[in-house]
Amino acid sequence: MDGTEGNAGQPGPAERSHRSSVSSVGARAADVLVYLADDTVVPLAVENLPSLSAHELHRAVREVLQLPDIALEAFALWLVSPLLEVQLKPKHQPYKLGRQWPELLLRFTDAPDDDVAMDEPALQFRRNVFFPRRRELQIHDEDVLRLLYEEAKGNVLAARYPCDLEDCEALGALVCRVQLGPYQPGLPAACTLREKLDSFLPAHLCKRGHGLFAALRGRGTKAGTGEQGLLNAYRRVQEVVGEHEASLSTHYRAYLLKCHELPFYGCAFFHGEVDKPAQSFLHRGGRKPVAVAISLEGVHVIDSREKHVLLGLHFQELSWDHTSPEEEESALWLEFDGDNEGTPVNKLLKIYSKQAELMSSLIEYCIELNHTAEPAATQESVSGPTAAPGSLPPPAQRPQLRRQGSVVCSRIQHLSTIDYVEEGEKIKRVKPKRTTSFFGRQLSTSQGSYTVVQPADSLEQG
Image (cartoon, rainbow, N blue to C red):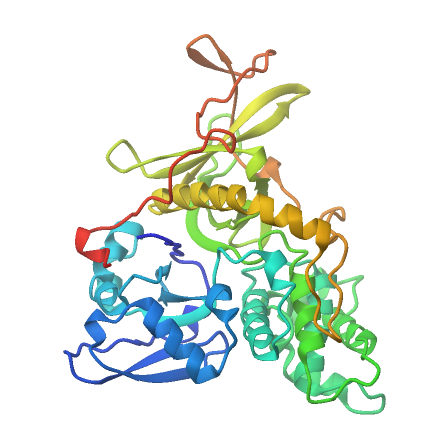
C-alpha cells in the first residue's frame, strides 16, 4: 500500500475502544463512522460504499466539519485498531481494505490467530505523516488547530511522545488553560488538578505509591511534585491582551509549538524489538520492545517500557536496509557513525519487526519528499511565510531538548549494536581504519518511489 504506516502492540488512540467504522453492506446507502482524535464521531451517509475512495470520504468529513482547504493536506484517513495502523492514500478504498484486514494483520503483525479473528479496524481522521511542520506553523484556522492539538495531546498523555517532566508540566498547563479557563487565584485549582490529573499528565507520572516501600523509595522527595509543578506552570500560562475568551487558537498553537521541540512529533509508529546488551560473558541480554517513529525529520527508536529515546537519527546520519522473512527473520537495519573506545566505527542496529519492509519504504519516501521540498523550503526561508493578522510569529529557530538526561536524547549504551569497519570484502569488528558504509542505501544514493506493499494485488484500487 502506498503511504502505509503501521503500529503493532504500541498503545495508541485506537486502544480507547474497539470499534468498527465500516459495515458489511452492499451498494445501498450506508452509515460510515469516522473518528476524530478526541474520540468524537463524524457519521456519514454514503452510497455505494464498496467503491468509495479515501479521497471521497476525506472530502465528506471536511464538508461536515466545515474545514478549510489546508485540511486536505494536513489530515489523512487512517485504518486503525489495537493491532495495526495504516495511513490511506487518496485512491485506496477503505471498505475493501477493511475486508482484507486479517490478511494485513497476518503479514505485518505477530498477533495470535484469535486476536486477528476478533480485530476490526476503525476509520480515523488524523494528521498526515507527510505534512511538514513548517506548513503547520502557517495554519490559523481554529478548528484545524484544535484537531491537531487534540491528537498531539493524546500522544503526549499516552506517552507515545516521551517528554521530560518539566515539558509534561508545561504542556499539561496549556491543557488546563483550554479545559479550565484562565488561572484565577483563590479558586480550588489544586483540587481540580488532583481529581483529573491523568487528563493533564501522562499516566506514568500520575501513579502514587502506597505503603512502606513507596514511602522509603520516595524518601527525600516531595509528594505530589507533578501536581505542584503543573499548578505552577498553569499560573505561568500567558494570556494575550485583548484576547477574546472564546478563542483558544493561541493556546492550541502554543501547545503545538511546544510539541515541535520533540523530534518525533508527527511520526508514524511501528512496533519492533531490539537486542539488549549482554549482561555477562555467558548470558545474552534478550530483547526489549521498542517503538520505531519515522517522520520527514528522521528515525527514532523509543523504549516502549521506559518511555525514553534509545536512538535518534536524521536521515543524513544513517544508512539502512531490511531483510524479509524469505531471507531470514524480518528486520530493519540502521547504520550510523560511532566510536568504540575512541576508535571511529560503523554501528549496526538490528530492529526485529514484521513491519520492516513498511519502515524501509517509508524512510525512502520521506527522503524523496525532502529532496522535492528543499527548493520551496529555501525560498520560504528567504521570503518568510505570510502571517495572518493577530497570529503568533513562528520562532526563528525551534530549540531542541538537549538537557542532560533528557528522555529525547539517545541512549546508545542501552543498545546492542555491531561495531565494525570494512576491510576488503570481509566485515571485521572494531578495526582502527574507518571506511565506507556497509549499505548502499543512504540519503545521497536513495532512488525510486515509495514502494507499494500489499498482501494482494486487489488492494490497490484506481
